[in-house]
Every structure is written in C-alpha cells, then in structure tokens.
Length: 291
Image (cartoon, rainbow, N blue to C red):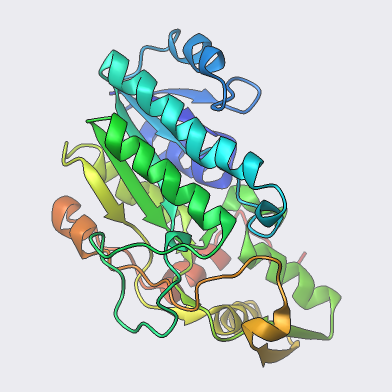
C-alpha cells in the first residue's frame, strides 16, 4: 500500500514509519516543513505528488494548557486541519487515518467503567473540544476513515522529554529530590511502538470507523511516575496531590480509561499491559536511563 504519513518526525510518526515499512508498505513521510494541514493549497501541493492509498495524520496541537488562551490555534490545527484533509481524501477517494485523544471525555468525573466508542463524549477543555471537533469533521466528510483515540503517548523519538512523560520523569527524578504528582486522574499511558503495531494491523482490515487504542490496565500519573522510578532504579521522594492542588490552566479528565475491545476484535491485536510496555521501553538498548 502507498501510505503518506503527516507528522513523520514525531514520536508516533517515527514508530509508524518503522512498523509500516517492516510490513512492506511504500511510504512518503511529510513533516511540518513539507505540509501545513491548516492550508488547503499546502495539502494539495504536498499530497498530489505522492498519490497515496492511505493518509495517516499524526499532526496535532498538543499544548493542553496553552489551548485555553489560544483556542483559535488549537481549533485550526486539531479541527479545521482534519476537516481539510477529510475533504481532500473524499474528493480523491483516499482513506484517512487520524489520531484523537482520551480528552474528548471528562464530564463523567466519577465514572468507573472504561469508555467504549459509542459512549457520549464530553470534553472539558479547549484542547479536548478541538480534538472532538476534528473527529466529527472527518466522520462526517470522509467515508473511508479510521479515527483512533489514544492516551499518554511516549516513544523513543520523544527522548528530549517534549510530549514524553517517561523521559520527563527520568530527567526530573535525577534533577530533584522531591516531586509532587497528580493521583486522581485515571488513564492508560501508551507506547507508540505498541500503537504503531496495532495501526499496522488495523489498516489491512478496511473496517472503517472509530476506535480506541491504548495499553491495557489503568493508572494515575503518580503511580505511573513511581513505577518509572522503581524500574529505572531512581530514588526520589514522590508526593501524591490532587488536581486542584496542581492548579493547571486546563481542566483534565478525572477518568479517561478507554475500552479497546473493538480494536482487538477487528485486528486480533492485543495491547500489552501498560507496566509491561513501560518495562520494555526502559530496557531498550537505544535508551540509556543512566544518563
């Protein structure tokens, strides 16, 4: 299959490149310098050259707190950009795969069961609202689409710590004697390596629609960080705090665990538990946790 990846330099984009190439697909990899999804002319200029069967969009505005003060930018990239991509794909009869977020949920703060794809969304931040709007545009415009919601991504290409919670904790655990971490937001951090493997399976099915794709299990950011430190052998004092104590600009879901049974049924792919994936990531020869 001829596939164009938008956002190919990011941590998800790079793992997708490896997984899809290993599966024999022909890839065109575009970065922000090659294409601006907020601009229809840029989309046409970049995509007309590659003539893909499938476009995978990993480009997104992920500055959750900053989106509260600049929602216009968040919506331009997360909603209007996907809308333009959907229009292009529908016009040219191209499949579109787009990544969304667990942040499309949040209104049900005391919820216990994991969210399924047909559960009503309820975003509580400008970022979450922009991601949900992007979903709706794609689902309404492009008949051949996959919209994949995921959560807490971390991958080797994010080793600078930008958008990679694991790397940020590894750095802070060595720089500081004490850390305070939120312990009342329940979610499921996900390895980009595992997500890429799931996507490589999904695109061969032609079972278009909305999917949830995360590791198995659930945790809080406090427990996630403590597990990182335990596995990496880093001694640092960790203190659990509430969302209110952290005082972030944007409100986060207290519970955004996703049910991935639909994806598993369609693809036969089963995600590892988040602890297993984290251990595999930290044991990678490409990752020197002693730096």
